Image (cartoon, rainbow over all chains, first blue to last red; front, side, top):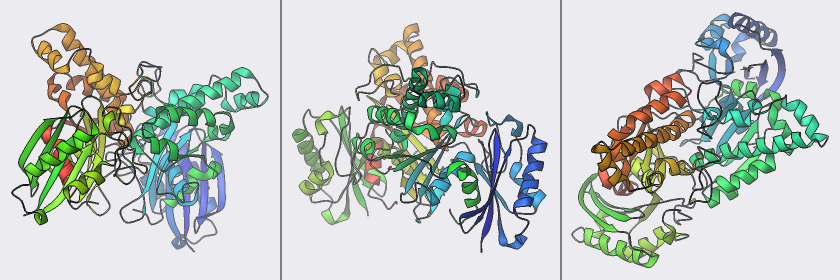
Length: 295
Length: 295
């Protein structure tokens, strides 16, 4: 039996899974500690708990998903705008050394997309674009390569998939990254002036402002997705992250905006826009799947 | 000796090349006729002239580059905003039948990028993004695949690379495609209120308005390129098309804007931004190279 461990480090929580043959057999969630030292310590402790009944030689390794960007070798976290405590941290090396296990690290949204491609909404398709809507927007592109194997589009210098920092309004609002008019200012938690969960409740009660906010959010999401379709023309886009759960409030607006802004008639008619059904653990599952045999 | 023919159909002119072992041995340029029937007739006549001294069995075929988007099978031109006379035309089939030669068709900007990747600025790199700045903006992504062969990122439904219709200002000016705030309204001929060649002359004479216009054009170009770097993280971006020749007037502004808007520190430091040296025939050369052995 093949086992692998996945860790998904978000700005608010860290998720852990133990996979056996691509199925989750154990999982755990904790709040993200404030500083680097405590993050590393709690990752070690929680992985040790998860693996205590599995002999070390039966564990393929640990996959780590973390907010990017990462360096080319996927060993250092560079400058994540939404997780600044890990800036320039050689995380994969530290955790591998602490645990005595092989590690692989990848951007969290790419892990999410890998999970969706291998066992989620994307599994019947060949080109899967994943977006995580949370405190920012992450993106991943996973495709069947020339050998028929799943491959993550990593980019050359480690910076691909930073779709949240695509400019959609060049004279717009300033972003935490220092740039202006970034997509994630209009279609992540940053767009809302109150908690999106609170706003979702209010919208479901019929409160007009809340409903209108989600509609505008949906249109903004559609603008960014249309850009990605015009550039990449994927077969399916899977959206995940906390806000995706509120999809009945915004997804029609998103689809309408895509129809307005995608050039290719075939693409706008045929591309699938789906919401993740893997839930909160998708990122950690995808991290564990980094240990699987893919190119 | 292997021969192949390339045709690049632009909104103002059509270029033809005859390649022998990847080298141009003959070329021809004509003005683009007004209607479909005349376009097809003049393509046949000019190819017949080009190939008259080469036995048919020594010609690999004809590659056609044309403004996209195309259908999935690359046989039909769908709805090109800047070449409306070819809307829904099954061009590859018609030309193949007329000439009795194998044909391959691809979006013109992808042909440009293929030429840059195989024999141009991109030949020492593995991931090449090409942009053509003309009456609109076309884009192509060419990369070494898992087998080490050059591959064009085509997208699933034929719509990839339409970077000119990426929204960079969602409440901006209306585009010929019907959408709003498209990149090509800010960084192609559409941006200038007089001919870019005339403006280039004036800028070189020191006229302030002309110089400022090109600076603003350069910043706009940088916004779109930064988006593409944040999404794709290519190793090199090669710009071509008529306006690219005026690069001394705008390329510094472009590079500065990229530095402001790309998230990954490694990507913004390492990505190369180059101007095509293949000249006006790059698209036709790339079209002919479609017949070469690549995935």
